[in-house]
Length: 326
Image 1: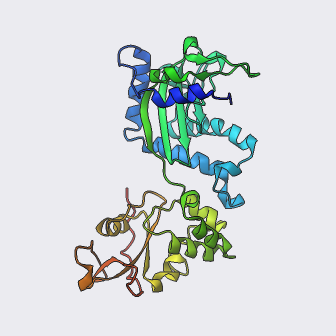
Image 2: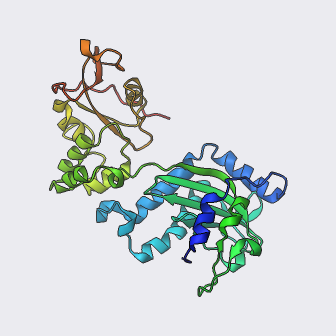
Image 3: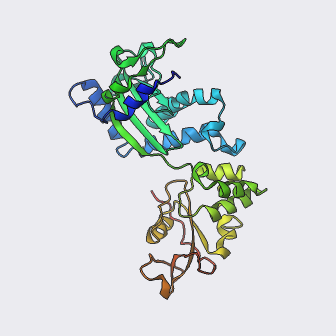
């Protein structure tokens, strides 16, 4: 990656987040509209970026959760994996000269974890580029389109002649999504002492129990479960029948999954709603007089609320039957 001069970094922070006006580049407009139609909310792009980072970390085998622990060769491979995984997700056709063909146009794909660090090859000159950025530390991501012009590039002397877009010309990028929320890497962002306590447990089941005990009211994704359990049957370790859901029930801890019935309970309690492959844990107690103005969920014929720190533990009620959210 080319080094960034201090002036370039300052310029990057001052560039207004403008959009290239529609009509200036009709081919770019067509590609833009096609991609927006494929993924109106950006959720699919966000999940590809999340899953690609998790794929590189390979937590089930390595126990890693931090980008900094990747080998240099793995980081270099990230761009290729993003390119491959986006093509699989959206079924983009192979391009003639570039990576993809989208809406009849050749489009190259470039990824960087450092905003502005996209490495543009000489053969992309004059073509459209799909620029992807995701930062696991900031939990943010962006996707944009730009037509590559020589005058908009920093000219370096790296061996493969790849260039970067000048900070002052990043306003030429037409953003499909800009600075959006990346699904959180909970292990990276949780309290360090809690994380240490989780990984100090010897068994995979015990580590998962400790995770759901210590990380409550936050979405916990499948890859986090996989990394903590480091077992092939990691999802089974969450559910009832001797999984974390059963083990923590006596402490009043509910573990809601991505089923419609579970999401409804999470919504009633004012918790984040688990998306596909996610869980949210929380300690609950039966509603009492001092729980006034508190969100209530009805479970097993009783009213339940999120526990306050001083509320004594009581066994959690059973969750409703599983009906997966479409």
